Structure formats: structure tokens, C-alpha cells
Length: 346
Image (tube, rainbow, N blue to C red; front, side, top):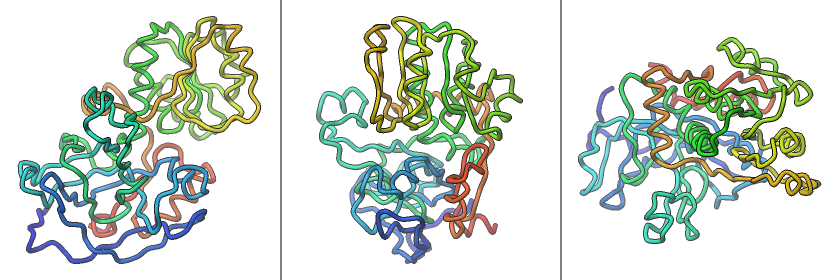
């Protein structure tokens, strides 16, 4: 890829902007190209950016509420084309990012869990800091995760948040010494969770009502069923990747005593009987994205072809609203990814 210098960087870029909440669509605007503002800032020329289910929740006004106007897009991959004084070693490198910026001083930040910081500063592409539904995006160098050239931009973009979440969820499941795992939902998180379980030779089933997604996993040798009624036996761990409220009751019912229910996707559950949790002495464990090492591990597994990717569907940035509607209607079999128009055309 041609590297840009400070002199050749354009002054403006195309970007998809969230102008209102709730909203059904993003607005395409010309925005100034970001430049480094601090010594550890870098600017990525975006190769690709994944679309996450969180984006749909934000658009519906059901999740995070960033100050408007705002650029979504928290699953980017790109090339560093500008850097602050302490980040110049990143120039020309391909990288993706960790999303969360904590205060950097509290115990959870120092332990590598910035995403859990009680004084969270920003979530790139979600809160405070503009994201990568654009041709360029500015991030901190400390957020960067270098990616191998063997993986394409869309492949990396399919891993940034959904992959980190899947890797975190399966790490938690394996720490529980699970002999049998039930994955609920075969979207990008559930697909990658199932693939990681298969790579670790852990017995598992996947519940997925969407026939398109069910067929993709079944073709790769996974046991995939359409509903909880078809689940065979109980599982030590249930990994809920859906963010759908009505799956929690049957999901907890599918647990063995002392079982673990992992919330990789989460929703408001207005009517739930926690008596079943007590009667099983079950544990409910939340998962918020993943640690840096979770993302790095999954990138390595995919690069070595030990874990396969969900089918990737791509759209140019100018058709981002077409992509969003395809996700809403269940027409995307795997992962939806946006590519800036100049690269799409090239």
C-alpha cells in the first residue's frame, strides 16, 4: 500500500456520521482528516472496519449515547500514516486497536483491564473518540496491536471486538474446566467461540435459529441446532452471544449444577426468575470485549489457520446504510465489514 506523508495527506475525508439518536441511518459527510494531537497519537489510513451489533443498538438509542455528531466504527484495521513524537516507530505498520482508554493509573488499568476502568476515558468509535467509519482514524499508539500481512484488512476487521469478546469468553469457559459447552448464537462472536472450542477439542453445541448462520457452522463440522428444545443434555458452561433477553431462561436451564453462564452478549431481561440460579448454585459471569492478549491470541490462531473466520460480507463506506439494513434483517451470514471507497474502487 502506498504510504502517505504529512505533505501528501489530504485535508478532508469521507465519513459516515451519526447525527441524531435514535436513527435508522448514518449521514455521509466530508470531515477534516485527523492529525496527531499528542506525542503518542497515531493516524491510521483505514483499510477496513467491521460493523458490530453494538452499532445497531446505539442507532436504536438502546445503548451508549455519544455526543453528536459522532463517527461510529470500533473495529478498524489500517496503516499508520502519521504519528506523534513518541510513536514514530509505528509509521508504515499495519495495526488494529484495543478499544478502551482508561485512566491508566487505577489497579484494573495497571492489570491490563482498561475496559473495566471505573474512570473510563473513552471507547474508540463508541464514546468520546470518533471511530473508523471513515478514511482515517486517530488513536493512541498504546492502543495499537500489530497485525500480520498474511491477513487481509477485512479478515482483521472481523476480529477486533467480536474476536476479542469470543476469545475472552472461551478463556473464561476453559478456566472453569468445562467438559461440555453450549454456545448460544452463531453470529461473529458465537462463530469464533465455537471455532476456538473446536481448536481446543472441547465438546460443544451451538443454538442458532437463523438458518443461514446455522448452515455455515454445520458445514465446518460443528453440532448446530435451531432451538433449545434440541439441546442434548446439560452443559457446564453456556456462552450467551446473542444479546437477546428471552434466551437467558432456557440458557440457565441448560446448565449443570454449579454451571457457569457467560454473558458475551447482554440485554435487559425484564422478567427472570433467579430462583433457578440459586437452585443450581450457578454463576453468571459478564464479559466486556477482551484483553489485549485475547485479541493477540485470536489473531495468531487465525493467521495460523487453526481457527476459521465467519463468512465476510463487504460494502464500500458510501453504502454503509445498506450494510446496516442487511444486518437488521438477518441477511448477513457472518461478519459485515466496511471498506473506504478509494480502496474499494482500487
